Image (cartoon, rainbow, N blue to C red):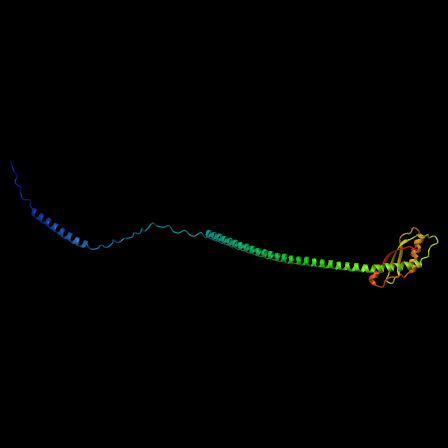
Length: 247
């Protein structure tokens, strides 16, 4: 068998030496890095990026003066309208408040007037009742006094009527045609002192001649006897009596 005898490669020893040096260097650097890695590391800094828009911007348009003025005018009108509405509302509230106060005062005044009127009406009714009671009492007293006066005067009245009949009888002239049993009722009006103002037959005897003779006798007998007391004379201002010559 044929065997090829190998030859040593040129430069092999040098490469091996280089490789060994590289490994030693790496191990040294690794040790150094391990020693320094035990120190606390600083936090990484955060870098904020800002995007700059470098797009070219269009030139600003010139302002629309007319549009701005119209907008300003509309805003001013709107503001004036708002202020006018606020003022109108305030005035309405003020009027409402005044009206409420007026109604309140009117109600209080009406209440006071009704209370005053009720008090006056109560007082009027009380005065009316008091006056009616006083008047009734006065009438009762007057009636009682009149009754007593009438009772006292009745006798005097009858007495003076008898005196009047007697005087008229003495002044009477019997007519030739007058029969017996004739009588009539005579009404006589007198004044103070007994003067006769009028005499008339109010119930005839049936004989006109007899009736006229009695009337003439009354006028002839004036003044008739009457009481001097003025109160008692009131019963004789107008009297009626029956004339009967036979009685």
